[in-house]
Length: 255
Length: 255
DNA sequence: CGCCTGTTTGATATGTTTCAATCGACGTGG
DNA sequence: CCACGTCGATTGAAACATATCAAACAGGCG
Image (tube, rainbow over all chains, first blue to last red; front, side, top):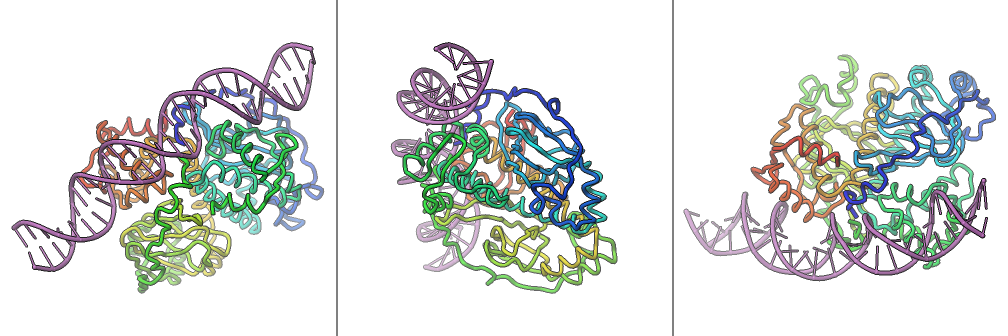
């Protein structure tokens, strides 16, 4: 691939500049009944720690397309995803976009070190999050060793995932990328207790393309190819059956 | 690009399986006189903390091509680079390789969370490092808050760099990748006090290719193109003058 | 039903890879 | 000191995977 230069002006990403406009704030729901307890940042906290932690949170709800944070803006808050899906991306001056990752329930947003966001994040469908002041997190992580440790673990895990993605972008073929993508999505769904096999694909083909370093068309064609090969099946666009897992795995690894 | 599938068997990377064979161990030199104090992990430590830290270190010296760690092996040690350059990479079953990053003096190796290395690391030319048991680092970071904090910062910085590289691999053209590479190398040299403008390129064209998601030939051709355009100049292969910085910057950003 | 938006499919263009050959620097041995 | 061999870098020609351009298709909704 490459050719980015020429795919450029396809949109200039004038996307609805919703920013925080449609974003709505709500009271924080009790952590005890939280759907993502156990898998989220807060999972490692004791009962008392959790109380202290939860007291600092407030809830946020986003509509599809809403921007949660923007690259370059001051990094004032950290977030924990409760429901829905977000895409994190970087833009180039001419509009080329690279999605660096998707966030699902239980995922944490706010591992940055510097004052400014290194990427933007936007809702894919409706999203619920809980939110905390970054400065509060910093001081809390000083008080609660478990929390600091958990944050470090999350960062380390994230590092490993990004390295995997670098391998994908640098060396895998379109088919291998798509296979990897489907399997990763499926495994993540399983981890948070969702259905793993007819795997839910909340984002559009263009988002998948911008994540995998491909175009919408190539993603679509690749899905079709896998479908014709009997490796995957489809009810709707957004729900895909993984039929031949073995083949999919070996495709993903590039064996 | 893409086509990885077909570039595959070009070598199967049978590379000299030197592992730790040529690796030699030495006593640890005093931290006070260390060339990379201030920029390395240990930079944030007080005098007493440094003594405690340094007492745990031993020195390692590698020859060109020596493998320091291998993907999948247990992660027993962490390292701080004193001199030279290392490449960190992941391999696919068929031999395709992706270099995830280069390490220079002052850089830290060992931010992993799990028991196993997520990548391999190999010396590019002669390398000097100091080494510590991972378990010792873990306990020390419990005792020394500064250290824990420093490690977290390093991880966060690393996250940001990997995201930049993901943008590069996913969306930049060959020329933009090479321009970015040269500038990054130059800036890092400056940060550690080395000469920034005739920038030293210790690694070969093939390593650069495997880092940028390109082939040796494309890297070489791109250098030639930049040279003909008067943007860079060359004394030797490994030392490159950045002549037109403005143009190089705008190329790198893809404006 | 017809519009709208996202997906799929087709035909063609192109940047990069692949295959192959030449060049250049460097070290070795006669 | 110069032929020779080696290894990495460079250059050329052709092949190819994916991008681009364009059109058809499908599903959801007013």
